[in-house]
Length: 293
Image 1 (tube, rainbow, N blue to C red):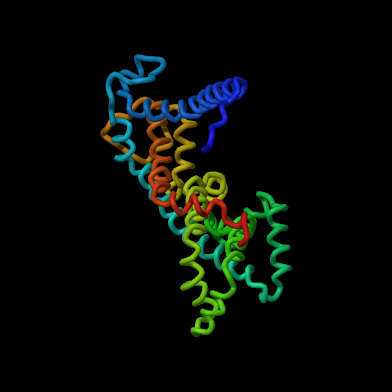
Image 2 (image 1 turned 30 degrees about the horizontal axis):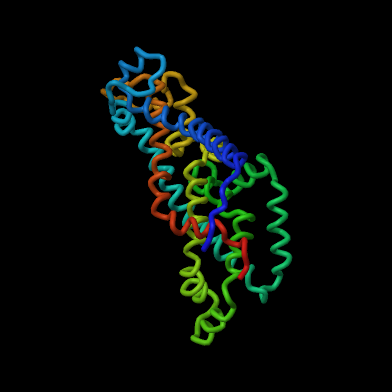
């Protein structure tokens, strides 16, 4: 018969204090998000009448109606969606292929490649050399200026290589006996076994491309090609919301603060929607490479 060990008075005090502290930290973390969402749905007249809105008396979709009818804003959302979809797909292909090749011990020059990858993790060429490379390749003002420089990451390659190292070599040998070459083995055997890793890195890449700001600021001069984050920064920095200068809407613009909050909500919504669908794979994939079986 098992007996439950009772907590001492010190343990109980620690647990209570721990719960209180973590609760306060959680509230401090969630309150800005709550405030952004609430203000975005607040009636503009009520917002102008009050200094602080914690729970609006009248809810309104006016800010979202203005945004969804604004060509500049919707175009930037489309630009970010295109960037995230194409960039994530290409990054997963390059990262997984490179990592799988490095996980094969028979690869010639494997150690040199690993050293060069580690070198890129420790040392960054800087803004000016990167800009010069993008400019010389005639990638300025194109979507490829945002994809190719960030196509893969040395750190992600090392992590995914650790995952591929844990896959038994017997699977590859069996595939070769059945007539598969290296590419067929990678596509038909390795990638289906790598769904947790692909889901985890896919989320990382999707968030990175969706949140692209600095590279867009450097490489894109044409505002019609701006992603949502760059347009959002202009909306927030402009007190009058003048970043949407090419639209002649018949809808009167809501107060700038309400418009900013609604823009932030729209910008973060796609990632919030996507995450639950890959959470199961993501939970397994976050630990890839940490244990070699």
